[in-house]
Length: 418
Image (tube, rainbow, N blue to C red; front, side, top):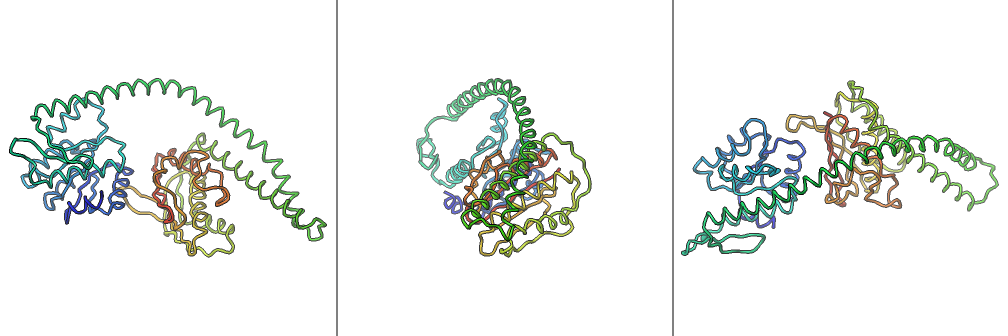
């Protein structure tokens, strides 16, 4: 489908407007993934001036934006004679019954509700561009030929009939939304009980974790003594058993550590201070590399990265993200890990990139849930708690975090801290 879109667009491009950092990054990833020419702007004013000089093949705009909103932009865009026939898609939550009327008044060609599915967005772009491309759209009988979901249809209904049908469908959708809102209200009531249960679970995690530390330290200590004792009389098979006991105890210790970090991440207050991220990352990498004595990593850390945040919490974030980058790229013949920053839509965006095994981006929504793992323990060790702790800390700093990845092509984790 993307090839058809590229073919119809030709040397034209898609103009997109999105003021949300996360949504803008998602749109950018969508365009790059489908190899589509695009220009992305954080506000309608800049996009409008650009469009007047360089007309696009399609416009995608958010509705709720500071300054000129999506409806005003669409109306101004359609008022320019040489832009009037260019299709416009508005991204909206469609929560107000007036949304569709405002869109029709502004001249919009299509609505897509947030959050949207990327396949659906590509399909709508294909339909709109294909319909525009059809030269014989009006038949002698006054009907209309159009393409929908890959099939061609001939419509003979009048404009009012089409509008009535459209409004009827919208009213049905609004009714379903009201039903969903009622269900949401019931879920919120149930959520109060879940919050209390979660609080109890966190307390339980802290208590159990602390109680496990002492016996685990004993197991690790005695197992290490047995293995390190040069004159030990135990045989090779018994030594292997003790080594397995030691490894399992260390894994349990890591789980205890992760559980404690997860439990504390939602409770500890932020103590903001200036942090030298570059220095912190270099120290962490130096320690983390001790786990891979035989592997030669290429590590690239941008110098001079600073931020204001809670030092202990950010230490946990970098420890997890850099640790994962090293771990999941460790089986690459030439493993590379990069930690850097860039300005993106007026914010400082940090990223940690690796060329490791990657994961299916379709499962990215579950990535930050506790105990969710995309690789088996036999492939890579881990507890499945680290990223959920990272997400909690980022949320506590009013930041955002997301990941982009492809299987076999590595991963990139982006995050902001304010």
